[in-house]
Image (cartoon, rainbow, N blue to C red; front, side, top):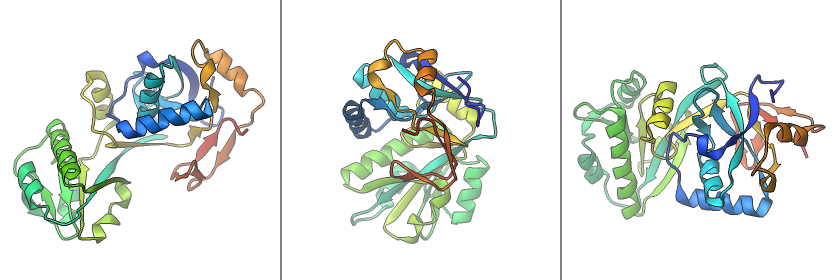
Length: 272
């Protein structure tokens, strides 16, 4: 069924045909699966590319469905080439609980010291695959580092930070200046991503690390609230029938939904 305010297509797809492009956080999947069991609904549609079934947003929902053995999912299929769909990046922020960042920098081969401005230029031009940012300087690879090997370095940082009991969190790329104001933070940011990178990862199965890409869809369809018990064997026609009589509501950019503030507009599909 077409969404009048967006041109997007709301549909029901078998979970087995959906292609994730990045890894998930196991604890998040577990929490989400428990929430779904408790609430008995799929709250938000999984956002997919209409041509390749690449999952653009909803990797953890997809993994939770697989855990719950739910065969179908409500999806919003979008034209990935559309300007209404943008791909950006999450930055990884590690907060040291004492000690130096020197060891992990040496291990990662990110030893070429540059200014923050030079690092951002190298990432945005795709000249380098990864940068480490601190409050006082930035570090780029000593040699060539493509996106795939850059992801291996990110895995090393994740494991090192876990062993050191550092805090790890994720911030949107346009908010990275905030953690960089504190000396105790180290930030990892990959090069500028293209939509072709996302589709290639989904097709090849060589997934991005968790929380690497960040998709903004305007307006973002949310609040479909379709019963889980009806998903197995569900059809798009049944979905359309369930939403009949439930008016759509468009919320402005900056609105908060389910405890998260969104920079794009939100389209509530089921207002009850």
